[in-house]
Length: 418
Image 1 (tube, rainbow, N blue to C red):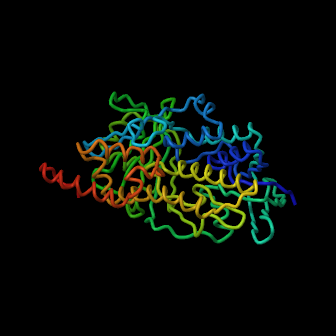
Image 2: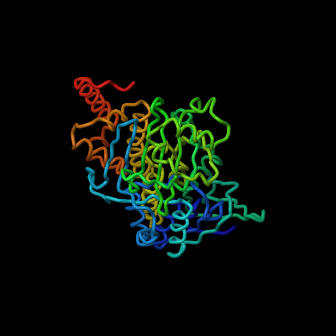
Image 3: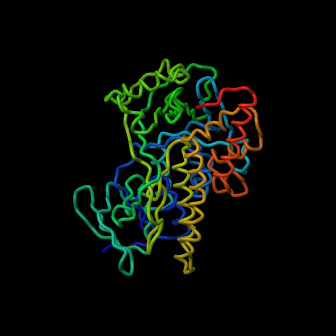
């Protein structure tokens, strides 16, 4: 039985960040990754708050030098309506820009940086069993050649993302309260020649008739984009079974997006993922904690997944460092509860997006610049800043401003969105 101090399951962003932070504090860390890097992953549009954790882990210089597409905000389009938010105009002090990345390259860069700092990463090794009933956690690991071995650790961090290793093995999975949704997506050579298109922003487009159907368009460096459509399962009923034909049909129904992509070359197989919203019974237990998507995934609409993952990695690494140095820590009070407050803020705006209330706010013309700045900070990832009223009371504040926008639109003689 191999003995290590900390085992991290998964070498994605949260795993690489957590491992590097622990190593920088002098701890022995082993990362076990089921796949071989580089590998494809969805979630390419980073929020500004992500770079705070990249910097904390000593990886910012490498990311800055990698040539990724700079991102300074988010843009939203619905018919002839357009609304843009610049992260530098936010309420919360923070980084004004971030990047849009092809995750295969970005994730490998972070993992390589963790390795450079002394973290041991073993690829193509899968966790097949886990026991937390003894004095120390024990994991059973299977190599690519089929051989197996055991590892005993003082603590395990599960950063396995959609793999959700410990939730599956320890029966921690819980149903999500989000409706089942599906995403169909690809990468394209975009050939965008519109002078009005801003490559430094993610473009979120709303279907002209189906307000719960939306598209992401994420520009990369080198003239490429990530393109995807998201909707409930019933929105895909009657659509072409061929995924590319399905995605093309949705785009064709949305003139504002179709015009932007008029010259695009569709050169990559189209993929789909469905039923991705997930939850767990607990974010921690005796000898383990869950990070990022291994714990909970909401929805891709505001690109919050990597931010939540990195935030959880930073929080867990700091708490575990104290625990390993002999301090008494409270994982519920100091990890699960504060992490959940930010996740719940994101959740309020995701739910508001699909109900239409948050769309009404985003597309409202005029209104308070202070409110826009507060919302902008949430879109930049700063969903844990409780000095921001739209973080501290997200549901009440969103309802209040949505009602105001509807009232003002009605008073101005505009037709209210249905």
